[in-house]
Length: 444
Image (cartoon, rainbow, N blue to C red; front, top):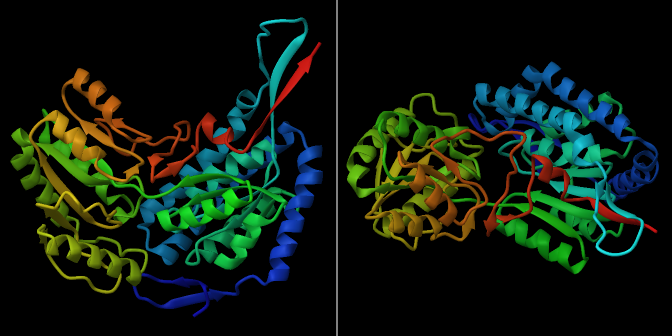
């Protein structure tokens, strides 16, 4: 089978294969992106670029159903969530169209000595490489391409090998929106070709969303070549329950936080840390709701992904954990489950419909458990005590904390983490400020 292929995870059927790029095609892509930066980027106005990115948003909405059907085929996303992803992606492009002028406005600097003036003027830096994952094929591209194309950078985009059809559909949207050749270029590249692209002097930065291993490999090459990187890597997000005046609602939020995209989200709730005074009630209700998810649960992205999750669960059980589940794995379909009594040294990220539940004897122990992970992407805190919520949010080592709410991501909210979850931010005003030349202009 070709490296780039659409494989229906529900059946395992290979629906279509795509040829990997030749070295000559990679060179053509880089040359086009560099040429577009030199010509289009330097000669277009912000108003021109805003009009183009607004057209990209409109085309996502116009082609919503077609785009959603593609990623259902590619990675098994439930249709309603696939549709929602397309709409959210359109909203990201629209957000940068609406706010670019404000975000990129000149920033005056008050001089401490001397006459004249000084300001910071934000501008593009050049060609950027984007390396995207399979779990959110449109959204991940939107939060990288939206701000950077509006700023005036040009993009070479390497999508996940199992998302070639959605990658082609995105390229078609940028073409149909009126972008010149080279402003956005999709490539079906190998890992070896990616390494060559990162080292190429025409490329000024790299943004990767993916695994720790991929992030470390990309950062190593980028570092050797003095290229900036933005990395959004794994997560093992804690969901802390300290108190509740409506346990049923808290459990519903917990289930929603775990099962978005069949549990295949880096910022999904994965470790549930529950105060001992409400632990039994939460665990009973949560386990019942988790087991209910087995009816109609979508497959994981591939049979290989289900196999990896099975091996992780087996390791946890071998270490002393107790698994509560019903049913058996069939191909890419994985039965939902709850792990308890998990050893504290089990720190793997479970990418699928399995939740880990811990009991905490105190607030301090809950925070300690939450921070006892190499990751630091997102986190959730549920409590009826506002002062406690603020206190715990301050103590959590993560890039994002959501208090008494799940599914509250927004186009205006910065997304990113700390520790081994990566560095840099996407979305919001911070998303347009990563790959930017903050040029000082001082006048006497």
